[in-house]
Image 1 (tube, rainbow, N blue to C red):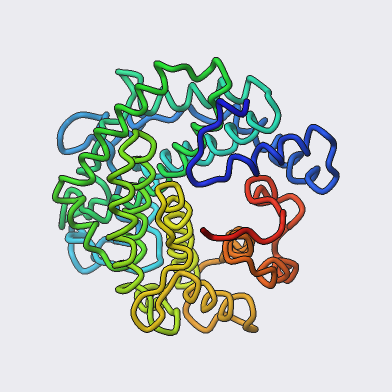
Image 2 (cartoon, rainbow, N blue to C red):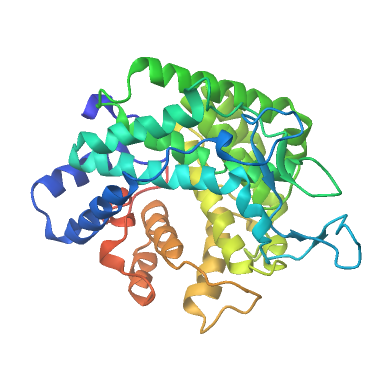
Length: 387
């Protein structure tokens, strides 16, 4: 198992240690393991998902082209045909449910559950289902998505697709990470691996060279951060380590400088109607980039830019305003998933070597702490150096 494990975001030694502890009957991991197995049993009946399942026909006429509709855009009630659509930030138009965005999100979620459950249990049925999901979406010549996002987050009456649609594939970084947990299973063979790498290589080229990709690269909010996560993750997955290093060395420090205020706040994110969700989402992306940077010898965990701007200062700001404060002081129109904050606190504690973050987890009364998957992929082993 050890030689078949390939991860970039997660620490292989930690995963293997947790696996051994589960097999040894470690009580502290029992609730999380049982919940993971239960969720994996349910995931066996999900999908397979494919872009050809949609009723909509993309402008190209090819149903294998990914297509989604911008979720916060609605018909103009003053126009007979509703066009062009108008934005209502934070209000999801149910029309967007019929696009490929939800299918891709469901794929990433199911794959994460199945691959994790397989790794920690050796139950082959989980790997077999994971392999089917991956081959259906990426490899089968009749159902696989074409590796581009020309028609992502279209806005009726305004555009057939835009760079903002690239946020739809933000989950690909974790998807290829989960593929790394399937290496010991015959259900995911070398041909499968090479096929997925070819798909990712083509999609990476599209991200780098297309007008949509170039537009997203210039975004100075969470869109830009998650764009970089995709680039670095996919580059590592296909063996383009120099590209991954270049982005970590050049692009990520620029994002720290332009997106984060000197006090650690996130000016672009707090303006949104779901500001807490977007602030946490952006910090998660910065954490991912810092972990990916470690794989190519770039220390982003301790990087400081002008006026002390840094990932840690931004994280401290988020903890102060979201966890330590009596209430979040900015607009949040939807319910926030506090399990995300548990994962951030655990990761922050480990990477910054500060147990005060870990101690704050107990204050998250909306989270079933013992059963969270965070305990399996980011175990409590004491502070870990960021370098």
